[in-house]
Length: 320
Ligand code: A2R
Image 1: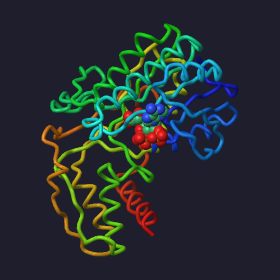
Image 2 (image 1 turned 180 degrees about the vertical axis):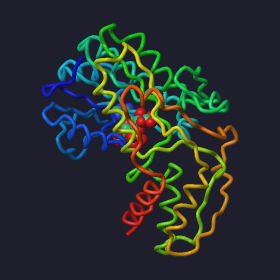
Image 3 (image 1 turned 60 degrees about the horizontal axis):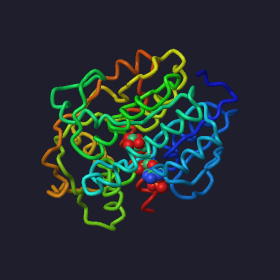
Image 4 (image 1 turned 30 degrees about the horizontal axis):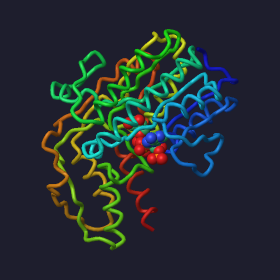
């Protein structure tokens, strides 16, 4: 399916952290398309998008929505997106991540059997496989928590239930962040604490978990640009293509903290919070991005320094 100016785009999870960036960039990339997003709750209008409020795991509602919108392109981001929360919310995580994906895949297969389906899975699916070094897409996934197990199950159900004419792109993003991400995630948490310390609304301390863990971080804009490039090259892709979306390098979390502390206007002490230490944590998570680069010509554009600067400045404004 080639994307034309008349194409209809359906996006789930459009009100989330990544979804909002994607809404903006899809509007810029495909200004003449029809654009519809699915949200769980009714939300304030997002520029250039029609919104439908429904629960992604409601098979009938999803089917009705897909049948009436008849999308040419589906981008599926709606998810319970936190690994940490998935441990205590296993049922809800499976309901949203697996049943929601199955509901959407079944509806697409039935109503738009030639549509392009981009499923945002996760680099987390590699799980314990990450211990053996940088992973490419041929590595066997070994998920370790309800989040990654349900994401992998979503990949598998789509391969089975989409029509043979649907093109499926499975994107496996590794860590990504930027302004607007919830402070439950590690880098926003550092930036928010630094901004609060500067304003004097907390002690000059930052509570941290394992700073030696190495992570492969991208700026959310680079992740979104990878998704859009994948859509653009979709006519030349196989029926199913699995693609890592990652920088290809892993730096210790301490590196990001140090970058942010350099920006602070006062001395801030780093304090270990044992509750933030996860015993089964992977020491190094790093993906191989060769497939993404060779398929699309993509490369990341935002430096780690600029990423840290953006986060601290964002939280300074949030706390003002
Ligand atoms: O929480 P809400 O109402 O803003 O909606 C979230 C949506 N969502 C759902 N939509 C419909 N039915 C559901 N049962 C349902 N549960 C969650 O998914 C929100 O708009 C979106 C997730 O956004 P965030 O939590 O901000 O995740 P983020 O970082 O944007 O991740 C996007 C995708 C996910 O598939 C991740 O697993 C992947 O990228 O890394």
